[in-house]
Image (cartoon, rainbow over all chains, first blue to last red; front, side, top):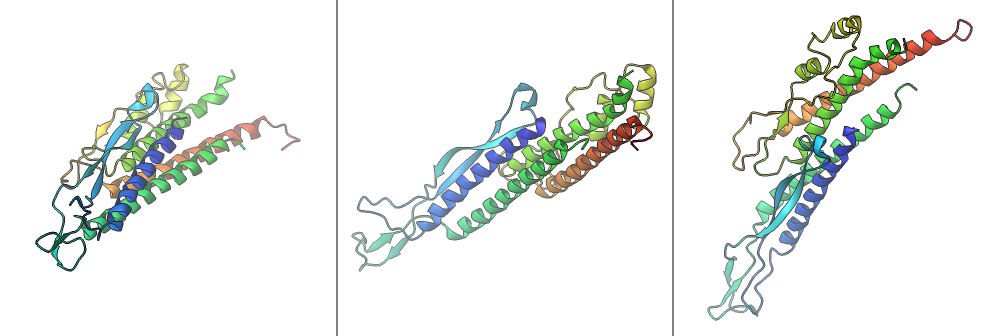
Length: 138
Length: 137
């Protein structure tokens, strides 16, 4: 039953995409986070996808799942805003916010959500086909 | 003797398992739509089916094989040759999955999988009807 492997493949993609959606959520939540007393602000996070082969040796070549190999932090300096009255302002009166770009994150979110939907549809189709296969000869 | 009954299903069985294989391949492409460096793959269905059912033209493959007596599909489970897709647009992260192409291939393949299922169901039903006695029918 090589079709059963589709659930592993699409399932791995769904979980990778949901992890991506998770990082987008934490990035968006921290758009306006200011740097703490140590001067370090929140850094935007990005997931890195990697192909992973699934199943036994005979099925390996055709079953390419996906996994999150690691999560990287964007090292560009955070946004600095002049606001001397702000409690977290530094000696020059600047406040350092996180380096999250909300527009990029929204695009990332839409892309993740579309990919998620695609993979759910793949699973639904595979399920329908397998159920019909079970009814052969009835 | 009994293999005469099942031989006619052999061709469709092969087509069905190749369709399942292709479905899995396209699912892998869709799963890796966002993976950097992933190259989309596919195989030539007609050529794979021809290879699986013994190098004859698809249409008359069964008849000739049955006459030869060794049944179709000497190389039954030879896995098809996978080819890499040519990217339709250049991509910064070297990913060659074209979602439009993959989606249409996926729908196309599932419809054809289902039609192969119907062919099999049809022949099974025909065989069963032929086995029924005059009074049962």
